[in-house]
Structure formats: structure tokens, C-alpha cells
Length: 365
Image 1 (cartoon, helix red, strand yellow):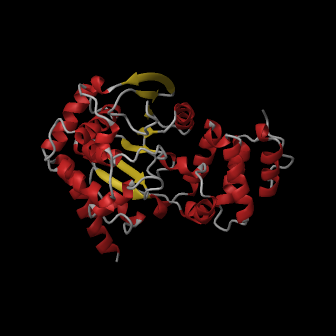
Image 2 (image 1 turned 45 degrees about the horizontal axis):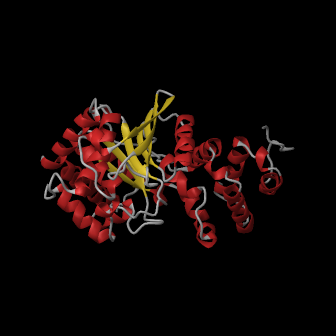
Image 3 (image 1 turned 180 degrees about the vertical axis):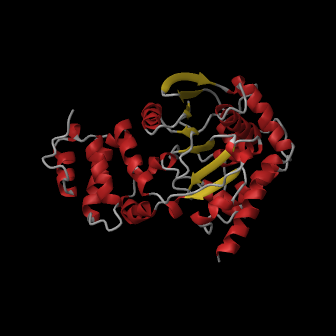
């Protein structure tokens, strides 16, 4: 249904009135205009109007609609700091990848996407992970990496071109000043808004290959459509049967796959990886410091191949390795993930990033 905006450049008050009075007519162009006004460098949108806008989007369910999600993400992408990544023959052989969850599933599992990103990087994938501190769990991707000694909050965007490590982490607040400006309103609202699910879509590296975990099947269908609108070449959107925003170690995971613009659905389980199932309790996470200890043990090959957390990580890494074209099947991806760990290459991916990041920070000082 077409929007009923009477002007080509409506004010935020006009947009809010449209949303409140006729939410069915609030469409992608209206969303684009609203987010342009919200994220402008000198935004004049009052906090009260922003609060009302975010609340209305949620109340009407528009913050879970693919066209609204894609339009919002497109504006945030355009406002993000531009980055330049290192050029090298070895790195350029692989598409830029990311593996990330939207969060909000309430399961508080171990930091599997961060760990899987490192394992995939050790298997030859070029991973540029984009993340932040925890919003709803005990330990977010930034939290565990900080506890592991990675200086991610100090790494300037201008230093990225000097990093040749197969794994790179972008600390989201450094690259999205517009999102920082709306943070006070989000905190005061006290409930999740559309901003809580936009993170995976606004990686400044513009990854071509992604695994995105979501906490509901409805959101999964909308999310894969949003990814297609944003020209992501190949992706899996995954949702565990328990509402887990990862590939589940406990049972079935619903997958929406995107390849060349075509969307397909399938269901996978640990058996498809040649692995046995483990309960979510067995992969529960702890504090960032506790999770960093587990990550260190994993990367040093100290966990048993039957360990629940290692298998959880290997499953998610295997899927990314396959999507990136390094493996033809999930079983082959599992083999490469195991080899990445046992050979020490996964650990080297983290060590190289930490070392190069520290040198880059020193040079920039």
C-alpha cells in the first residue's frame, strides 16, 4: 500500500503522524526518510518523538517486516564510517564473511559465533566480524575478545588497511556514531527496538557471505528477505528449534538459505554434521572472563573432540566454511574446522589479529 505522505521531504512529526494514524501505509520510503532524520549528524528529532516512533514500530509489528528492516539498515550502512581493508592475493581469494546472531534469545549460551569465526578464519576464510558488548546475555562478542586481550575498542578505522590477519573485529560503536546518539533513548525505553536487530545488517565491511542467527522463525523469514534486498550474495539465516539464534547443538535448526537472490528453506540437525546432539545446558555461557578461558582451551586444542562446546563451535564454523566456498559439504566443513583447531591455525588467527591491532594502535598514537 502506498504511503500517504503529502510532501517529498516530510518532517519527522509528519512521519510520526502517518505511523500512528495509518500504520498500514508506513512503508520503506517513509522508513528511509525517518532514519535519515534520526541519524543526521545534527539531528533535530526530539527524544520524545524518537521514543514514540520506536514504540509504535514495535507495537504495530513493523520492526519485524523485511522492507522496513532493509530500509533502516540501508540508511545506517550509508551513515557508517567508510573502511578500507588490506589487499593481498591470499586474502582476496575469499569473500568477506561474518557470522553473527541478533541476540535476545534468552538462552545465554557460550560465545559460539565469535569462536566459530576464529575457527573459520583458521580454515582459510576471510572473516570481518562486526559486534558489540552484550545487550541481553552475560557476554557479547566484544566482551569475550576484550577478555582475551584483543584491543578492539582502541583500534581506529584508519588502521584496518594495515591488518592482514584472516580475522578482524569491528567494534560497532566506533563505526556507527549515529547509533551512539540514539543510545540514551533506547536505554530509557527499556525494551528491545528495531535497533536491536539491525547490527548484523550494518557491518561496514559489507560481507558477501553471512550466517545470521535469529530467535524466532517469523523473524528468520523476514531477515533473509532483508539480506536479499541488501545484495548479500550468499547467506544462511538460522533459528534453532528452541528459539536459539545459532545453529543448535540440541536438535533441529531451521535454515533460510540465500544464494544468488534465490531463497530456500531447509531443516538441519547435528547428525547432518556427523555429530551427536548436546543439550543447551551443556553449552551454557558464563562471564566474559570465564568464556575467554574456555575459548583459550578450545583454540589450544585442549577440549576433547566430543566436548559439547567444541562441537557447538565446529557446527557453526563448518556451515560458514561451506558457505564461503572452502568446503563442498557440511561434513567437509567439520573436518576443516577440526583441522583449524588441532593445527593451531584458529589460535593463530586470533593471535595475528591481536598482534597486528596492537602495532597499528601504537603507530597511530
